[in-house]
Image (cartoon, rainbow, N blue to C red; front, side, top):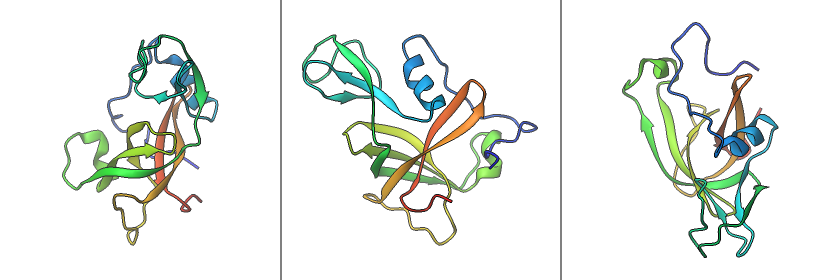
Amino acid sequence: MANEFDEAMVLPPLPQVTEETRPFWDSCKEGALKLQRCSDCSEFRFPRSVACPACASMSYSWEPVSGNGTIFSFVTFRRLYHKAFASLLPYVVAVVELSEGPRLLTRLVGLKDDDTVKCGSPVSLRLETISDDLVLPLFELAGTHG
């Protein structure tokens, strides 16, 4: 299945992969979603940080998460703010609270005209390949993949 970004059109602003964030982006390319997990208190955290916000430990590992969560907050964009998103209008940007706790800002994909998006709706991870070097972690309403 082709992704939603046509090479002939202008691409939206894309994340910059740094040495600090590379494990996150590499996990997406490998078909999983990994977040930092504190080696001392076991709390997951996002975005990445040097020290654990829960216990201040500087010890961590990159661990897979389920990719399941719920919509914490969302907005539906019906007006064009960047020409790269013209073909996506209307589109939904959401804060997804993962089952493991961290919240990610993302775009909901795979929505149909009759889908109802609301806070608390269950969602699941859908990885979208943008290029050989970048796979984005997007989300869809749970049970709508196909």
